[in-house]
Length: 389
Ligand code: CA
Image (cartoon, rainbow, N blue to C red; front, side, top):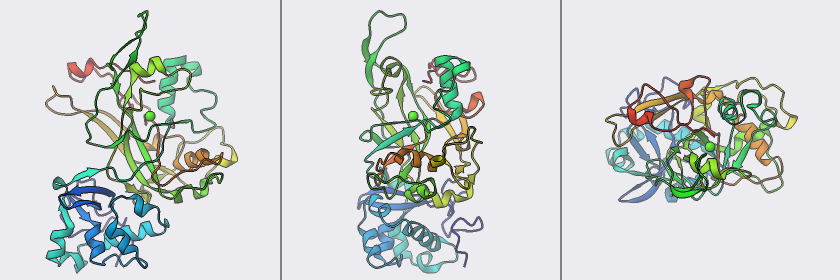
């Protein structure tokens, strides 16, 4: 039997549409709610595999008592705090159980009815409690675009940018699972030609397309994580939309950076794709010149070739429009460098921490990771203002 859950030849006994983001080679983890309560699951095609039912049936065959833990878990934090060596074991076992040639679940109609739930019948919720949120600024294209707007092309990148992964601490309490309604924030703004600021609803609500990593095991305070060990601390990746009120941000950001322009909401995908599932998508990152200081140097490839798109549909639009297509391979600083830098002063990461990449922009005008103006789109979209700051 094939032992590699990423093997492209694997097939499930569950019908999976070829265009589904959840083939048997992915198997992302999430937390869902049904009338039976909240539990952890794995996505396969249009279905959710209920890991509680699998664990109750004793099918994981994990080390002593671990099946009991899975059977009682209602949050991924209870799983990812374990020894990272166990994470791929769970995914490997799920892969094995879902294969077309494994009869255990396939031929057990009663268990199948309990353990395989249509995604349309569940509500996805936050996959884990997130104690801390850090937002990097690691896309050179995005930082350059912003810099040109703020300081002109000659000084687009700040002097530190090519030497360290710039970041700020965000707000964890307002991170929500994708699909949660976001209320347009009120805030203080001041138009360039106005004499005094006013308070009211933001008129420049923007998105920021990002990837985020969720930390599995943290590090003790005072003990940095090296680039070589960094990936061991990452459970998986989520999509991130770092909602931003540009008019509020423009007025408030100096000298300490964004505050109320960012902390009203950040959406993440409810499904967490493990680093193991992303292994086939690893590639070399952009060439780093100047060479980073020794504590930021990495061996091997740590960037990911992940195609990313932004689609917009307003209440007045009859169908969504794709307004951006970009790729995480454009990120200049990789996740190992971000973790090594974040902890280089001894700062302690905690289980469930979210470390986001920063807006991911590509080199072309149609690959910007935050809102852009386009003559091709509807009149409503044309009226949306473009701030990237
Ligand atoms: Ca951001």
